[in-house]
Image (cartoon, rainbow, N blue to C red; front, side):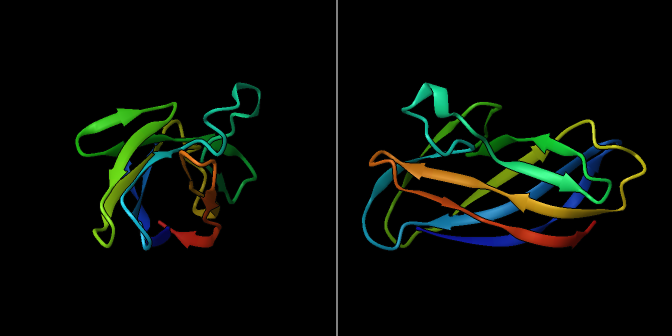
Length: 122
């Protein structure tokens, strides 16, 4: 799997949306966006964003007109990029930048990929 990052922007009064595109480079597969271990209930950890004030926010994820705050199942066709948006709510109005955006994707074989994008203006 390969993840490309296309930036973050304010998308509401206290909301930030971050856009990614994910592509399967090896085969058709089903992935789950926003959880790094969807099959191990005790190990659920989702995508996150940290603002310049040190606050952490959990994500809602959106793809193909579906949205979930847990994990969103997405079917990937080899070589075809899919747009996945991560939405963060209740952002502190005093925040002026993103220290880190960490999107998480995992496939049914429990192989995960986590981005780590830093120092993002919005």
